[in-house]
Length: 329
Image (tube, rainbow, N blue to C red; front, side):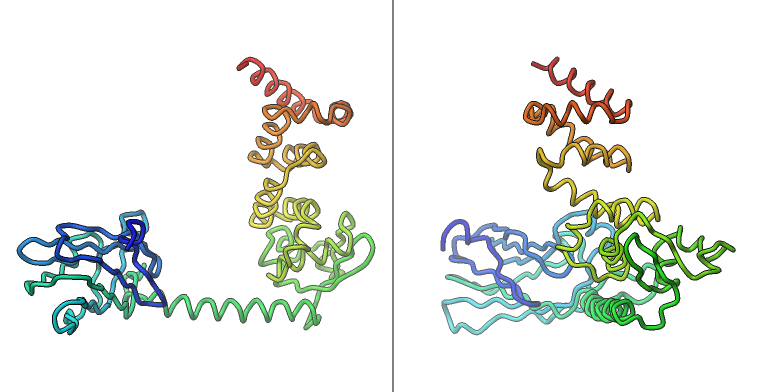
């Protein structure tokens, strides 16, 4: 067994196994972290007059705030002797925060290669309202299934125009949707439908600054059914819509995406949008790309044209960045 694998714990489903090459020579050994449920875990062995095995979660904010309540069976199988596994009586619903919360002391002499096998029966966290602890596996499985079903139903409602009650007029076409869904996702839409505005009275919304294709992408995002290529194609239109209709998660998704592929062809447009829609990380990244990495010299003509029409405060920020960078040389 190589040094790199000597501390590795293999996992599959709810089972973890640590293979130790020589228990006889072991005084203390701690495994690498391994993932089970929401937590990273460690196993450790200490051999003096007796053998002590510990299982505990890695210290983290998650462990402190939501320590695991574990049910598991732990076994030790050695290559020498009668090879009959030693099996712990089992742990049920034990909260484990530190490396002293579960210690298995074995006074039987064990030598040679061995496998420490941990079968996790359940992992729970304390209920926030003081009720019974909740199984993370049962909760996750139920939530995933419920979410998938709900999103599929929402998608069908839009794609098949099931009981639609609002028409959206884009610049080159119209599309139908549902007031309740739009109002749930956007406080601006909710306000439109709650007051005596023309959108409520006529059951229409005019979004003439978006094409029908961008508007479809916007609705697909709202209904949880947008495709990645569709999102990338309409990022800037989606950013404008997210800002206009106060959909913060879409705005942040666009912000994150626009940070990923800045180049000389798009940096000035993105800098302008970062300033317009108050995206500080995008603005900072564009500034660094232009100034610190010297790309402003590669697009000198475009940059000069940009300066003729850009916001004065933004121009001042650019020149401040240039002066600060040159001062450092």
